[in-house]
Image (tube, rainbow, N blue to C red):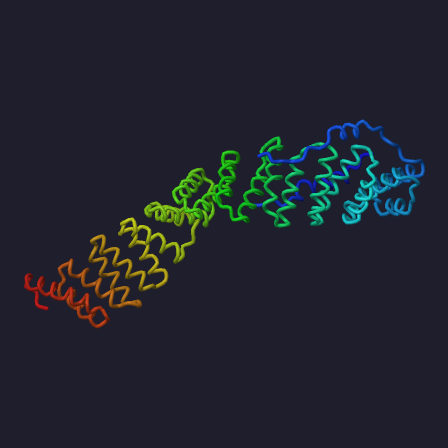
Length: 418
């Protein structure tokens, strides 16, 4: 009998039942002789009483009358062990969608006497593992997956992945690695899930270098898996391999894999950490202009400070000015003025510094000191000396005393009366 709906339910579980995270290992070989003997064993047939009941129940099932089918079968008392096992198997399959817990109980009863045909016994052992995993009975799931492997002599990547998942759910992270490796070994085509399971386990075990090795292995196999690129870059950073972190994230960016705000910020931070501030600023500016990054204080300050570190003072001044205008921020205007002064734009620097005083800033004394220089280098000695006095009044006596004689001397040479 073909149980299409029941089979479909198990196939769906097989596809989604494993919660995959963000080679070969020692494994006991099944007994080949016993397996051959099981396969060669002649199939039994159920007795007439049970056979007729199952036939009727199957008709009801075909009419979507699962409840009626179960009501017919459950009261039946089988006359021998095989009939009982076969009946339990059938009832267990009917219960898969209706009540997985009952399904599990009936299937376990069906396999215990080990009298069913090879295919039926093997299918039930694996189904019990699947249902146990779904019910979060992880130890039981592992037990029945191993029973299935011992019974059939088969190795299956999906089964090994589910065993790995069960160990992970029980937080037995060290035990995840072996079945994950078997899943990798026995997969006909590469699957990312066992690698992700290994990586997550090494992460939980705080084995950073092992986690990095898994990601390094994954990248050539799954080059379009963006998360692996980002995670490898982050883990290189954790391991203080900053040059490698930048190389990986930069390569991912050049391949068009980085598309979110946080990913662009990560790359910018790595440029700064590797003493390449100009690239950090240019990257952020590009994506601010494109609209990916928010035009907020953090971004404007980051661009400005990165350009400043790269000694691109005019560009830095532009973004400090944008921040000052956006938030009416005196400190941003002060920074803009200092950047313009570093770019020898002294008239513009004085304007920005005066704006800082106008909107208010925490440290007026420093602004007055900066204004001394801005006016001095324009040859405006009276204005410069005025800010010498204001700097002295605002807690910058040392700087005022340093600048004062110098301003007076230059004014005297120019014939300017202070």
